[in-house]
Length: 400
Image 1 (tube, rainbow, N blue to C red):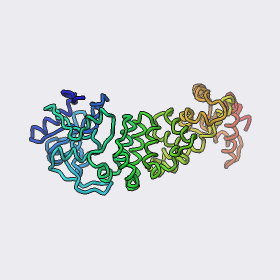
Image 2: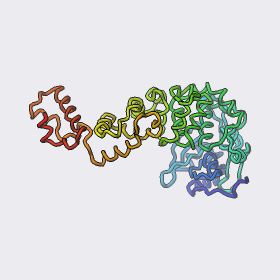
Image 3: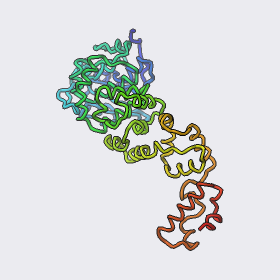
Image 4: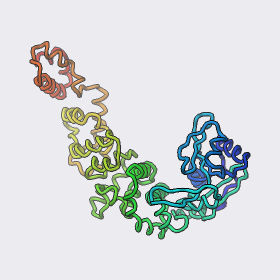
């Protein structure tokens, strides 16, 4: 398949390219937007690569953000404050597998040669409508294959995160990973241990959000060895029938990375802590682990109310997981979401704050200050959960 005669470049990007070219600096569009447009996937986030050094980019444009000047990247803000990344032609002169020292003042060819995969090493000139594809990325797009630029071992040793990127692209586009590239990924997987937890987490979460089938992404992480290093709590990396069932069930869940990670993990809180997730996300994982095998019987309405009262803000997570857990739960849970919706629509009281009385009312009614106040409120809530019609001031004070 041949390249299209021209791509529809956003006016804001064209304006930046024209100014750079007008100042005498060769400028090309590169990156994911080129790849996605060739695949017919809408993507208007065009990045530019240029011969202009970062300081020249900052001088030519009044409004810029130095997002990575040491690596040659400056974000140019358009009239609507949207950032457009402009990166100087560069090549790596030294790397430790996590960080690279780059050299500027090189050619477009040098810049494309340092990129990770052939499908990401295609350049388009937005003004002359010319294409540069020195590594046959277009052919790999047609063949649906992920292939490293140059020697895959070198590519991965320059930045081990590229291994995880290969897995993400494979799962996102349903592309196979070329055999030499896949073998190099497996051979260099131990280098993933050098990466920061934040980079790994972002790649894992991004992979979940974009994969055509999350089960494919999970299988790739297991096959290459990335799960063994970073996600040892995952239950699907073995070959048992039950584990395969868990891996397939994940495709039925909402694309919520924390939810899916917690569903797959034997100890979600431990895994999410290792990935340096927020305290809120870790707490979600801990609640899922605590409650995922304790769904109420939908045939007993007071029991459903008690469950909602106990799980609190985590109810929606647990309901979302039903698609994956259904085969492991003994009683019929298919009615549970509908039942919960009706309870919420009726605004049934579920918490101490929902009671028609509070601690001050109990003190005024003669309850002695101290732990007895809280204990009495809990007993009143238990009665109200059994029958919401009891939630009146008169009834509750009579019970006190």
